[in-house]
Length: 455
Image (cartoon, rainbow, N blue to C red; front, side):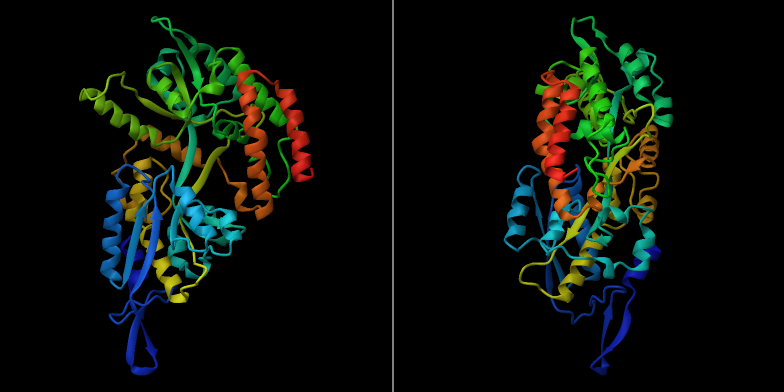
């Protein structure tokens, strides 16, 4: 970390106009750090990324201003509910913030306001990022974002319930499991409890697409389209996936009311011991549940303490395992009334400060893989997740399925999103409720896919 910081901040003397007029510059960006540097303001819109992020952010900015006092960092903390809408309005008006916390999006690039970062990335910054991570901030090979962490979707288990049923969760964490193996485990995990309530093997919500996306990625389909734009959800792979899910409900291994379950109700069932496994479970559940257990011990809330186990999503016996992962961090923008190259360089400097070694606390708090070597070094020995779950997360990352949207052109990415909302979502509701059979859903996918994608 010290070496990288020195490289980024060491002054390079340049002659400007006369031999006695000098200023210092940041290698790679040319951003001025001299006392006479022109005052500038960089606007940052962000979110409460994790429990302590609102406290962490001022410290990162304070460190930055010790080196760049002429650059004022103006932050606004958005709510997850209203923030995206506010940003879209600002972007459409041609006046987005300089930095916005989000994953890269082809729609942003299509506005012409996303700031390409390639020329600002020094060799030292590139070398600090772990292999394959910077690509998560690219659209068609061009850099627009700086990942702060790698989001990771998985399943989570209740250790007590798994062990009572004789499920070897350590082996599953290490080696993964197939659909056949999951079905065998489900039969052991589904039962009536002494209080008369039903315990399910698996619970998910019926309102989002996370579940079916994770399942199809574990049956050889990276997304509705592949990275070349070819339509995927029109063959036996999607039929087999839908059938697997439908059978889980028919056998009683998932609730028959899944179509009506909200994410909150899904979590409530897992906390209440009504489900052995929850989908989806981000690794942050580890810290959330540890905090919940502390509240139970303190008498703040009532309930059974849970020992959380991070689990991979099972894969089709004939397919490779695939982990849903993507980069989230800061994306840079210019405005319709462009503020010029010096402001762009200053924006990148702030972006780097909010993505550097100390910013790795976001990954640490969220129990996610670090994206930079300096972050891993900074938080070595301070990890918040349990060792077994941290190791499981590293193994899951080895099977990452790269988001296809990073390679698609804007038109195809937009059509894929439309297909999911207008075709996949209602069909999943119908599948969960039993209103449509998997084969009928496949036919609908084929027809609508040909309509929308011409294939």
